[in-house]
Amino acid sequence: MKKLFSSLVLVSILSVGSLNAAVSCSTTMDNVTISSYSTMSSGVLQQSTGLLELAQTLESTGSTTNTEYLNAMLQLSTDIGTMADRILIMADNIGIMSDRIVEVININSQNLALTQSNLLEATRIFTELLNVQ
Image (cartoon, rainbow, N blue to C red; front, top):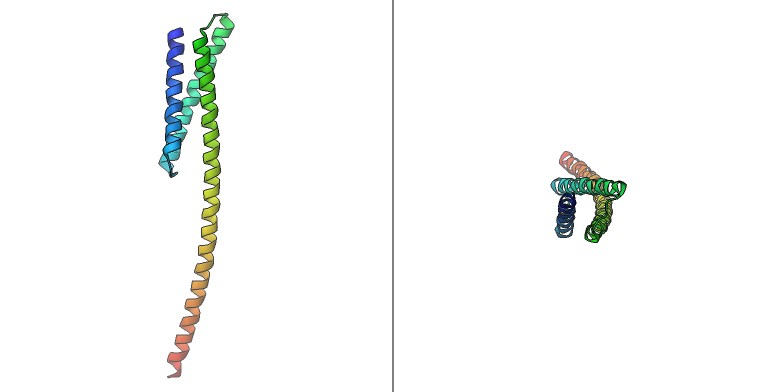
C-alpha cells in the first residue's frame, strides 16, 4: 500500500510540475496548447482523486501513515492550488485577448464601411466625369 501511495504521489507531483512548466513557458494560446493543458489538468485531477481515495481508505482502516507521505500529499495540494491559480490567470488572459479581438473586428468593420463608402463616392464622381465628356 505504501509503495502504491509513493508512486501516486510521485506521478502526481511530476504531472503538476510538467503542467506548471508548460504554463510558464507558453506565450501563445492555440487549440493544440489549450488541448494539452486540458489533458494535463485532467490527468492531475484523476491522480489527486486517487490520492484522496487512498487517504480516505487509510483513514477508515486506522492505518498509521508516514509523515513523509502526508507532507507529499500536502505539497501536491499546494501544487494543485498553484496550477488552479495559473489556469485562472490564463482564463483572464484569454478574456482580455477576446476583448481585443472584438475591438479589432469593430475597428475593421468601421474601416470597411468607410472604404466602401469612399469607393462608391469615387465611382460616382468618375462616372459623372466620364458622362460629361
